Image (cartoon, helix red, strand yellow):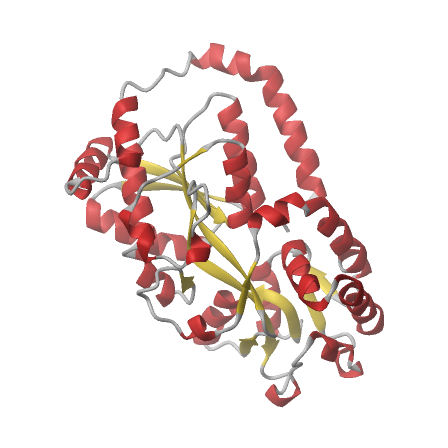
Length: 361
């Protein structure tokens, strides 16, 4: 899901609160000075000369650090940041939360005149929201040419570093491979009664699947599945995947493939599959316009598009760099357009709550 109703209320309240006290905050802390290195920051974002890398490294080492807000699992993110720190000697400060809270904190801080964060690493729709808030900065990186087209937005203010594929996961001790559903219609089979799980806030996946099935028949199908066989709804894709591995949920209808693959590789009784076309969403990075460490931010941005791509593959993600081969390049995918999801968020959130979340058994 993009923005839950609870989050919307919290977000509105937080903005109202900060709107009333922002002046007091700025007065108490002193005015936020305009950067004396505005010219250098602009150059970091846009310079394309042959000595670009040399300038970025020199500038980043003078800055010494950068701050990243992320919604990626910490055990994954530290692999990338440790590799970056080892290569460049530049410290990465991480703050991790859910994608909605990453969006909320970034917007609230900016409206209060606080500019601590350099890089945002999160889901595509939240990054698109930050673009609409005019908080992100285009980076003219030469490495964009190596990415799949779906990773690059027309405005180029954020870029996909990896693809989250929505897959189905099953417990291999409780579900036989030959019994797996080949279509969503197969989930109406009585053998799935009391055995299905879904995530609580997957309205973007839902919108993509329903558009493939046709709105009227697709909505009817999922109403029938919920009514006939029941759905166990849990909040969080990681939690849902872990419940499949533990056997509490024999079959989950929409999880992130990489997390199931990670657990499978650790020996858990779990595997995953897709019903084509699999829904896919780019996750990525964007640099804030008022990044306090612009050279380090751009260097990290480039790193996520290059050196980190094999590391992402090693963590069972699907990289967006075309030079990194993965078997998932051959899986039929339908990319969820973050702009369309944002524009129709209210509709699909309401339908998902009505058909899926409120019918949980």
